[in-house]
Length: 431
View 1 (cartoon, helix red, strand yellow):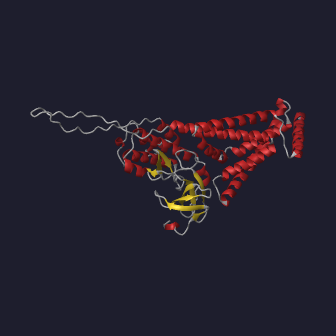
View 2 (cartoon, one colour; view 1 turned 90 degrees about the horizontal axis):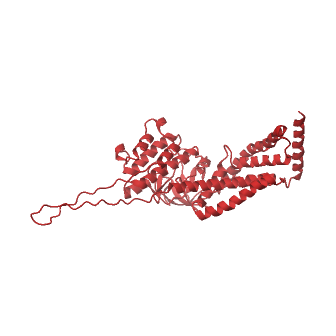
View 3 (cartoon, one colour; view 1 turned 30 degrees about the vertical axis):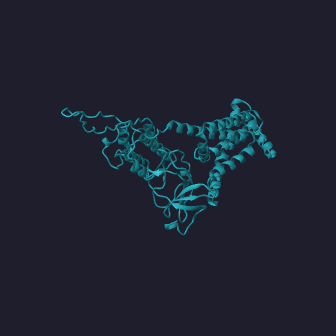
């Protein structure tokens, strides 16, 4: 180990191994669980939004696993990506074209869209912050630049794609493949307001068809057939261009869709349990969402932060838990008598749904999606997980709609809630 870490073998719970290329302050390390990670050491005073960074879900963006801000030496921990910077790949293999170039353009646009959806910007997108793995781009070092903004990222996309296509940073637009020129021109517009946002950029890039430019070799030298006869040039054979494997962007979209569906099934199961067994279900939900928030964090600070964020959502969930039975009791004036325990159980289900996913509360669900994304790439795993979770979700819905809720082990609370809702309905009926 050398440089600034020669005297420091650990950063938090991570053991530093070697310095990585592609930027200062980046090291390969190993976590307490033995996982290979990359750690970027940040300048003193840097305050990366680790929670938002971990919420970015895309096969084209490196997974952020952990980090610390507000300490003497802030850092960000991400999954180790065994790729090479785009600058090195182009320098060695030459500019990209055809399907390889399309794959790069689409992947970078989808990466920016995912980063922007999380409320972040990259700020330093370029050939050095794009790693190439099996021909696909993986964007790293996002969300680190203060004052970065979305339109700037879109223009950086245009510059990076131009570099991938030509091997140079500044070239005339007509040096690009004709299919790519309109979108690059729009993304590089001098007026930031005229540029497409990242979502529209990704949609437009997905529709691109970048046809390869066929190389025509120089004619072969004349071949003398017989003395005194005119020389006849050898026939020119048009070579078949070999391109990198085409990216199957549809497969990646399907994998993300399955990950979202499997995560939604888990949420349905959790809400169903909360309706059938409100006390047990809400406690299990609190534990589950806290563990998901703390996943991949092995520090006391990380666990404390997870507990704190869950605690902040409890009043939000409690308000809805109380509001639902009161609203149902009020509605009974018009629609007839309701089951008191059922109303309270549906309130518990609403509170559980808030803890899992609600406006402003998305970290547990996103972490579930991140976990299922690894499963969603294998059809057999998808089938097994889909069947198991689908059956459990169906049973949870049927049980929530048909079974009498149990407030075990707080049976006294069950009786009190039932009497309170009954009195409220009777009072409203007399009004």
